[in-house]
Length: 274
Image (cartoon, rainbow, N blue to C red; front, side):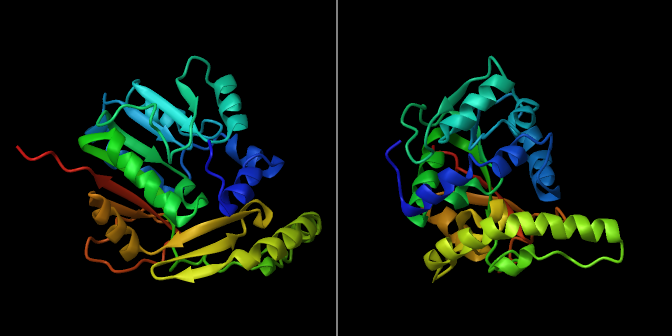
């Protein structure tokens, strides 16, 4: 657990805030239609195989993954969340582990390795590469990895503090509730935004940017469809499918970009040559 980049120091704090814990313990089956489409694509291909669930958090994905196979391991680098997940799902194999260093797990073993809810975006770019390399190591030849990532060409990129201003409605009750909520959130969000915005950087194919989630309490990587496919190929994966977040549509294999909020990638480690 020695990985402590600047992004780590910001994001690890955010995962244990009241706002994050409330979100993590919601009885939500899927984050969006794209995740549902991805799981439906993977389920028949990975049924009964050993599964690894990275960034399990408080346990939202445990039921989803176990519906595919009972041979399950879940890991997360936030100890507080692992403790919570163990309380909620006793008897489940859940481990405190950083995805950048999963040496405790066997190589070429899992049929599916998943990292949902854009969790891979919460580490710096070098850490992201290391996670994908570790996913490649632990997945078996012919097995799949699945992860989601914020889209630099999507509407969520470049969010500012103005996003938290109350939206107008002619319904006085709703308007009053929105104003009250904004009055509570804006001081904290404004402080976080001003503190984290200096970390914003643009690079070829990706950016690091503060995001509105958890009152602008996180700083994450936004990547492009083209760059993520390139990165996967460089590590050795073959991209089999990509789904857009909100509509759940499968994105064409020859598409260069997408306007989805985030993207769900399914890639496969090729079979070893005979």
